[in-house]
Amino acid sequence: MSAEDLEKYETEMELSLYREYRDIVSQFSYVVETERRFYLANAVDVQVRDSGGDVYFEVRMSDAWVWDMYRPARFVKNVRVITFKDVNVEELEKPELRLPEEDPFSS
Image 1 (cartoon, rainbow, N blue to C red):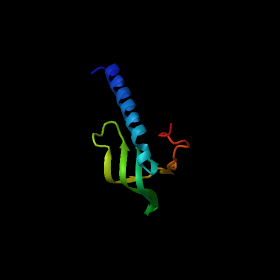
Image 2: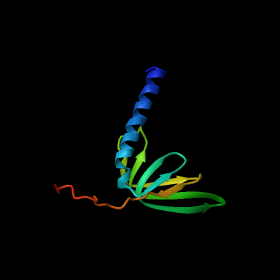
Image 3: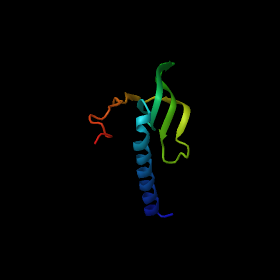
Image 4: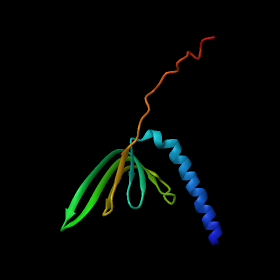
């Protein structure tokens, strides 16, 4: 496979992954960024750990989706991440269910 073919493949996979993300993001409550990956999850627990002066983060997520184009199964029940870098956790806004202002069945 040439470098051009590999680049084209990676571009297509990223686009496919983005489309999947766009279609499922509303099913999750949190976005989590670590140094290596990006996750969507419905439960997140971040613990700061200290091991002999080295500080690291232990991140546990459940009901998660992993942004990784080389991973065949992106949905996971539980995931645990250990990182020495910052962790960013953002709560996703959930728009409230709104009923249409007009009755769509009235004539």
